[in-house]
Image 1 (cartoon, one colour):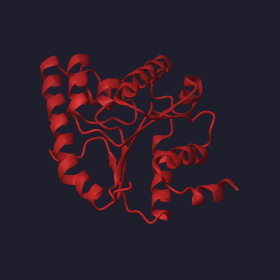
Image 2: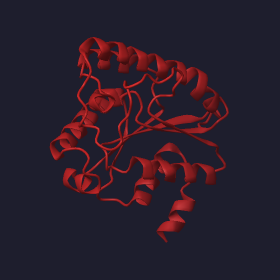
Image 3: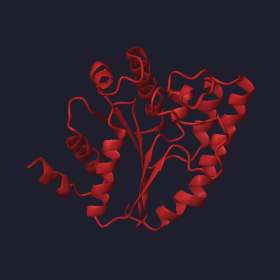
Length: 212
C-alpha cells in the first residue's frame, strides 16, 4: 500500500510469451508475504455480461480470427470502456480502499496494441481517446525482450507482430507517464519480479531467498 494506506493497481503488459502470468503469480506471492491481500484481474472486470461471439479473448491463436465490422467494433470499444470504468469504481476501488494490491493482466490499453485478439477492427483515434480517460493504474509494467526468444517461448503470434506490438507498447505506455520496463529475456521470472516489486514498494525477501 502507499503512504496513505491505500492499495494500488499493478497493470502488466507485454506480448504473448513475455511472462505476464508467471510474473503476476510471483507478485501475488510477494504481496501476500508482505501481509497484503491480492486481487487478480484478467482483461475486463465483467461488470457487463459477455456477448456471444464478441469481444472474447482467444488465448490459443489470437491472430486467426477475422475482425468484426467497423460499426460493431466502435460499439464494442464503448462497451469495453464502460465495463472498465464501472469495474474500477465498483470492484477495484473497494480493494484500493482496503489497502490491497490489484494485479491486472491486459488492462484496457491492450485494445491499442492488439484489438484483433478481441475480434475488433483497429480504430486508433477511438482507442487512443478512450485510453486517455479510462482510470489509470498506479503502476504500469511493460515486459518486453528479444522478439526471437519471446516467439520461441510462445509461438502464437507471428514474429513481426511481436515486434510491432512491442513498439506500440513502448510508444504509447511511455506517453502515459513513468512506467516500469523490464527485459524478461535477460532476467529470470524471479529477477524480473524483484525489479518490479522493489519499484512498487514491496519487500522482496521471499524472492531473494529463492535466488539464493
